[in-house]
Length: 407
Ligand code: ADP
Ligand code: ASP
Ligand code: MG
Image (cartoon, protein in one colour):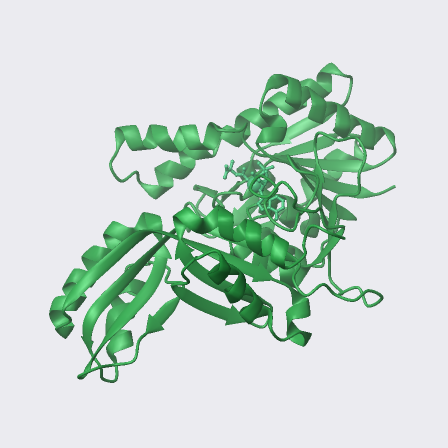
């Protein structure tokens, strides 16, 4: 007998029929003798709908109240799933994040889980219940409702699995595992049987939303056995996220390609080329809580230089405002904003022992006439910033060039 935490995403609980399907799946596991804790997301589209509602009543919705509103999506699903389970004769009890007590810090809309009180869940399981917990939400030490950031139900699932020392955390979604890239963009993408934590962390942080990055971090830290599977298929092993690289097999050089569309690039032109300038530009940007990703400072001419960096597109107006003040202060010539940028990244632990990945990537993009505007690398990834209109083409040709379709 095993203790399993299963998380079902928005599409998997997207309508009453699908909720009943989840109930049947969960009941089947219990009938096999397992103890099951289920984490559910809001029904698909619901979180977006709730966020849109808040924007209709306020220009800048208060973060505490935003969490009060968006956390309701998951509360509906837990109740509905329990009713569906009762309807097929299965004992089940639902809990919101605050009821479990999933204690978080107070960073509304992006809170971090600090502690989970697992004793009441264990008691319910021992009494033969399926325990259904709302994903994406918690409560801070003052009793305020918090949420964990978009895609946060994955993290709830993994955190519960860690707290309960579950045998496995299964993430059920609308694809049957982790693919070499988003199968909606490249139909030839191939499902991976395993992927290392390191690679999954990179893919998640570089834009593959199949797992929220924090869930992967959490699983790595607490050694949770993590698997991604389809909620619509009865069979299949999905993708197992592994700690060890499989020693028996030669590692592929590239395991996957990730991408993000919502990038913007800012360039401060004619910056005095002297010590302290990068700090004078990026200090105020950081103080405004804006995440800077790639940075390039060009070679100076005549005592001035150009300084470029990328930020999430949604932060563009705010960043331009900050930079206008900075520009006047440091005496730079102008600010240029480009809001239609995208980032493509190739990821693979095999890169460590195989030189030439960067040149192959750059050649492939050059052959399609795609201009690379910025580059950044780490031991296991290479990212480039390109114009958004070339994104899908870039992902497709790179997927082919690195031979990701074939086994
Ligand atoms: P859920 O609602 O179940 O949490 P998400 O929409 O958050 O589902 O994540 C699943 C989606 O992630 C897939 O439908 C797919 O389009 C996308 N995705 C992006 N990159 C990958 C990848 N490398 N492998 C599989 N799915 C991916
Ligand atoms: N419902 C939340 C979202 O859409 C959390 C999740 O689905 O994981 O981001
Ligand atoms: Mg998700």
